[in-house]
Amino acid sequence: MFVLESEPMILTDRQITEARARGDITIEPFDEKQIQPASYDLRAGDQGITTSSKKKVDIKAEGYLLVHPGDFAVVVAHEEIRLGTQYTARFGIRSKYARRGLVATTGLQIDPGYHGRLIVGITNLTPKAITLPHLDDFLSVEFHHLSEPAQHPYSGPYQGRVDLGPEEIEFITESEGMALSEVLNTLRSLSANVGALTVDVTALTTEMKHYKWVIPVLLVIGMAVIGTIVAIK
Image (tube, rainbow, N blue to C red):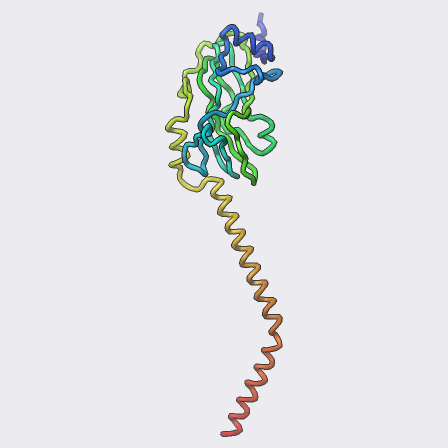
């Protein structure tokens, strides 16, 4: 006889609070205002890096992270979370940023047993720069209660990470080729140059139209001079 396993249960706002009170889930610093009906909003932390800046940005000191069109950015979340072995979580960019063209490009699942700050990759797919203020809500996390504890909790390379690591920084600062943001800037420059060239050609054509009567006159004068010279000889 087969026993159907129950599906992972998404925690409601009350269940998130209760799981935290039991120590099954840790969110630090915790703020009740960040709890949503069935999720918790994480805020933009102190560190970030973008392909256009090619250096680590102190978001706390600057007040924001500027993500240019086509930029790939890596942002560290403000909160540190810890999941018990019977809990997993999924996260995504908040809809207010998704509607503006920001897309999260990292894995969406947080495995049982994970602890640390989320280090998230985002891309700006719009033609306008997008500002990500320090401590602004930018990620939404929903927590799932599993039917049984995981036998092999997460123990990967991101376990315990709370800051940008050398691999994220080197990936962006030492990457070969042009970033998408640089490609877009180059295309804009080419477009502007082509537009200026078009304007110059148009102006020259217009100017030529003003003096088109000069050419026949010059031809007549030239022929007359040649005729005079021949007659003299």
